[in-house]
Length: 384
Ligand SMILES: [Zn+2]
Image (cartoon, rainbow, N blue to C red; front, side, top):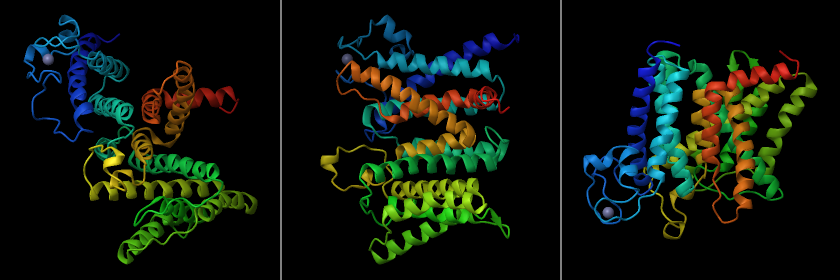
């Protein structure tokens, strides 16, 4: 064991608990539309501004017996729990990869995922600001350091990751609604994502033709359709059954004709993911707030358009993990969701956990062990 690992572990734990304390503020304030840096923290019960001694992570809560020092109102155990969780994750990350500046990136990755998970549990939404911050940070690391992924893998992973979840939702919705057309949203809605998937799948099946990668053409066509909608004030959209049906047909046809079925699938995912992320970015820029409004107060509001929080989170994870490890993350998320979900259902009540936290857990595990798990699985199948 390296000589400096112990002090690094201690430092990581202290730093993690302090960041966790800040994340508690983010988790509470971001969906409420309050600034995360000002004003200072108060007791939610009596309004007393918290003194520095009451802000020591974990320790303050334990010493005060889980109660406010002023009014003795109970303070949720979740505050020290978030601090302890962040501290432990920061420490584990430091021991697994005691390398700078890589570790700073991993700590940011962990902090974003902890905040996103608890906000999703509280509000069933994933704030665009945190999701897109993760995408930008991952792409910056790729561009400047080649870490956590080389840039082409980061871009590919982000687009395909978003596309994967967007198309799960698209095909799932189509089957669930017995091939009825989905609701039309203009100028930028789910129809454009499905259109892009179709174009990308049909373009991609030719592989690389004349140096032009046709799989990404779906993004161009989708953006053109969106600008047409915006300029005319109408919504031009092909039926979901048509676009998604033809999208699914392309890789099969490519396989039969001896073309590139894998490139067809890749074109489908890249184009769908690109349009999904562009659409979410569009709606977010039109209403750049993470405030969660009750739907009754906000009928037809922007917040409810393209409910693609999980899609952007998958894009964020794809940038950091690359596509192969992202698929491992999604697999772990579905598995964890099935197991934990059934336990919660058996215990009764309405405390269902949304998909975001499961994706975050899968993402953290796959970030460190994704490639090893794929190797192990291929070996298990006798393929490696
Ligand atoms: Zn109080």
